[in-house]
Image 1 (cartoon, helix red, strand yellow):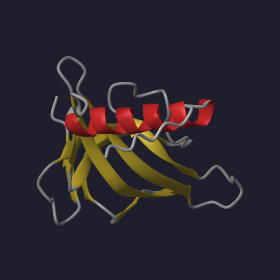
Image 2 (cartoon, helix red, strand yellow):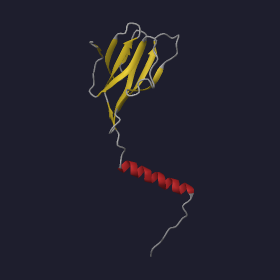
Image 3 (cartoon, helix red, strand yellow):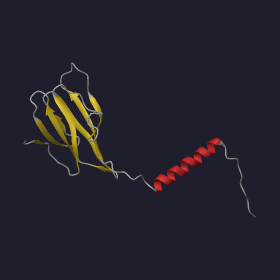
Image 4 (spheres, rainbow, N blue to C red):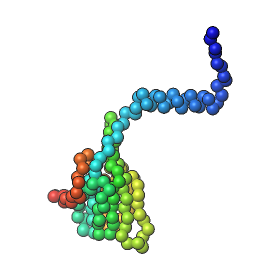
Length: 145
């Protein structure tokens, strides 16, 4: 005895079936880009007054204290794709002076450096690279010209 269940495929049922097929497709064939979680970040900081360029190797969740601000890096991710590799970091930037309430919490991109950056009156802050190996301690280095 063969029982055939037939029910009309309404609009909602078609949406459910299409979502299930999309989930199965993306689970079976993941997107080509891969994300690599990193253990720290290298920041390039230029003093706008003295033009001094300094690099900091910052471990995740450690505070980098500048003259007028505190910076914390929560995540740093390398996104590897066939032709468009990028590195992004989740950064918190808080000015020490409470006159300005321009605290920043957001993603900073290496490829598009001026797309989303913390605003600091003294320092220009850029993401130089994400560090795969844990730097353990904060490290300061200068560029030799």
